[in-house]
Image (cartoon, rainbow, N blue to C red; front, side, top):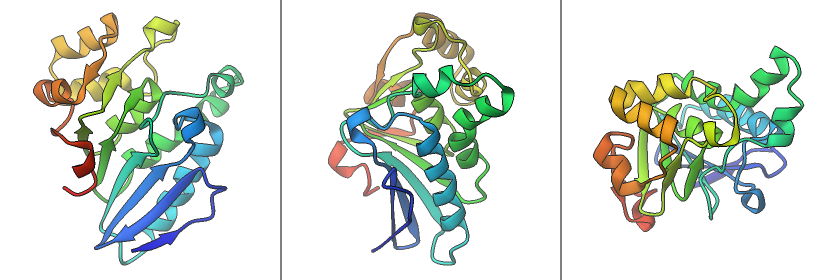
Length: 192
């Protein structure tokens, strides 16, 4: 296994057996989507996609959460379209990857954190996973293509209920409704 990256510790990068793992690494703030985290993800993706020894990318979060949403201070500072794009840049970079991407969701994936998981090609849920749209409950529109991405993998009724009612879905339920490919014990999440 090799570790790589120079991103101020916001993420860690590990490569083993042609699979790279990006771990969001701001656990004190539950790995929130901040400008710094997005910059680190973009930098990490650039590095990993340039390597011959990487054939797929897994994204996970340092415990206790996968990603607890956007940094609301960074979001409030978005007074131009260009600044707003920085909030979306991390998950858009994942969505645009030519390599297969897998979200290994351990703990909460809330709002923009859910968008980060939805940007991946496959979502794998740990038993501790909690999927929470949260946007309407805090007075925000479901940004970042949230409803479009949800609708691509679940049915219309499920998408509408998740967004409008703000139901928090655990890993097992996420697998039942098609939000996740499957739910596994947390200890197996990175070993599928």
